Length: 130
Image 1 (spheres, rainbow, N blue to C red):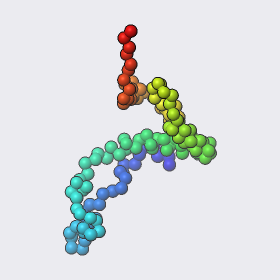
Image 2 (cartoon, helix red, strand yellow; image 1 turned 180 degrees about the vertical axis):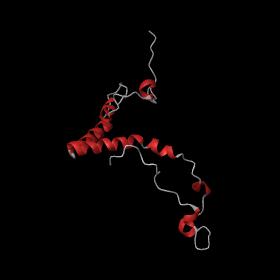
Image 3 (tube, rainbow, N blue to C red; image 1 turned 30 degrees about the vertical axis):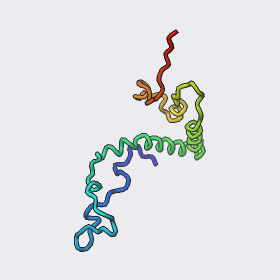
Image 4 (tube, rainbow, N blue to C red; image 1 turned 45 degrees about the vertical axis):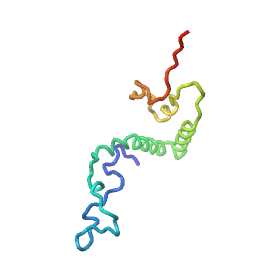
């Protein structure tokens, strides 16, 4: 699809009390299971779904544009290259920067928090006193 912004609807909707009542007006436990008040409370901001799916929507739009401009082979080839880079092995002793994936995803020209402060890495610098 050529969607620029993710949809506002967040995944599967939660059944409300109006949806789960029987003809007597009480909760139908046999069909919908025991009633849970925690599932009925919607504490998620509507903007959260859009922010979580922003990169995925932008990526799908780019792949659709490639398919429309260059044919079906272009997005398939790019997805294949991403898969190869994601499963590629790194050489021992080198840090895992994954610049290959950034280039394939088009993130090589943008600055992110991980670019400035580094990612969450468990590696410690090695200091030697001679």
